Length: 279
Image (cartoon, rainbow, N blue to C red; front, side):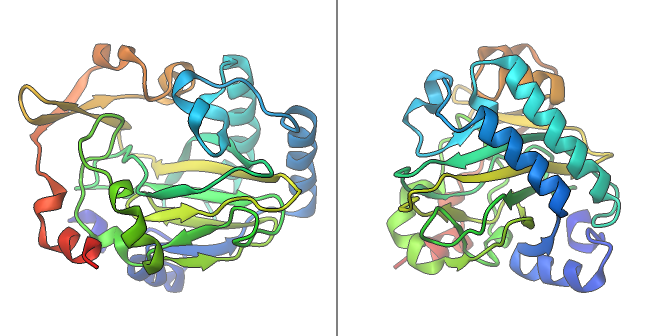
């Protein structure tokens, strides 16, 4: 497959490390950029904002779930503008699909073990999450933990209504993950397939972070929707405009063009998944 041979990172050492681990850490923001983002967050996100119904029970805030479309767009414009200027020095022909603020307020709890939705066809392309805290992070304030190498576990279809999720095996998977401390302005770039979770924010300070979904410039963006009547998965074409307007849980997705349809394969029946979730 293309994802196995294509160079993703310009730096060969980073490329090799990423393909082995599924996550790497690099510097991203300079002091001025960090200050600009912190000022925006302090002005607009110091207090919790209204979110869509789906997100009301979550243990974190992410701006794509905000009810104010104009605010979602302002967050995306600010963050994507900064990130896109840097990608040509880090990755081979990648772009920011959309960007968010991701926040854990004091007392916010665990985000369970999961893989991110795949927003490209992973048979041919690799999608990334870029996560950059605006203050130093560790397990005490909602830092991230990763099961390194788990991006190689086969699970091609991840979307809002897919039957399988690694969250079901949270208690088994947590001991297999390792914490990654990240300083303010550093970032983690990880494969959407890499299993990760975040700890509660037990401090008195809000943990601000930015996040960008990164995709190959040439790759169509998609969202996988499960069709139970056919036991198949439909790849619905999406773009930045659709995502900022509707998010991932809107019935509008059914009106989007279908890029391809594939018979559903239950990951739980695969040997590598069974090996990972076994005690």
